[in-house]
Amino acid sequence: MKKIIKYVMLDILRSKIIIGYTLFLLAVSLSVFSLEDSSSKGLISLLNIILIIVPLVAIIFSTIYVYNSTEFIELLVSQPVKRRTLWLSIFIGLSFAFLLAFFIGAGIPILLYQPDATGITMLLTGMLLSVIFVSIALLASVKTRDKARGIGLSILLWFYFSIIFDGLVLFILFQFQDYPMEKPMLLFSALNPIDLTRILILLHMDMSALMGYTGAIFRNFFDSATGSVIALFILLLWAFLPLWFSVRNFSRKDL
Image (cartoon, rainbow, N blue to C red; front, side, top):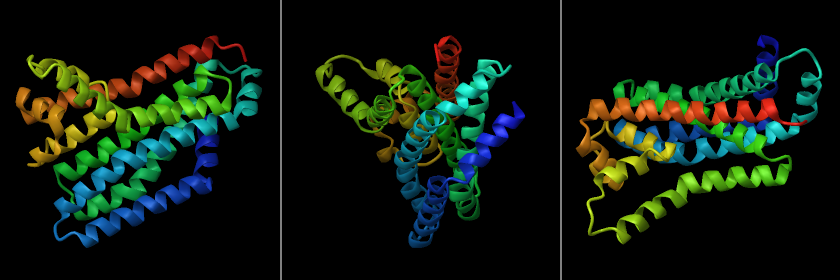
């Protein structure tokens, strides 16, 4: 398992896309902190970029990597290696590579300019968001054999979590505006890891206007500490459940 993880990690870290992704995050992070007059404003600017770019790169790159490694995966399956071990090794290798890229690109500037609880929360949630979308990418790629359909499914999932979800929430709120919607909105907020990440970070800031409707309900229903623990637990579930389903599908898949 260690050899497969090491091979996947080194293979990914040599990729020009990952190197470019790391340099892009580093340049953007240093720029926003340098241009803003306070590090808190820089953190808010960086948050909007992280919530869009990190999930997009993680899910698209991971999906393409799995499809491009089909021959390598089939070769290892023919060897005395358990399928579960092989799939988990690919997941860990991909996750470590993205964690390292995010830490160098965004984590180091965050720790330099905002080394407090809010900055550390953004660093941890950004890394967790990377792992979540690697996990979702593995599930998307194991669900279909066709590379184009798999990449299309990943793009559609990113589009749903980043853009469509907020529109659906507003549509439901508009349709049921005469009914109490606080508790249902708490459930809806758990259905989107990007929304949860935004809520978790903004719970540490006095930025109520940026939390959105679900974030404001989350803050009003729980206090900041309890809300943070609940949001973090749900994010961990988002990382674990797609991975568990993908391992289950890969173990039964006819290669």
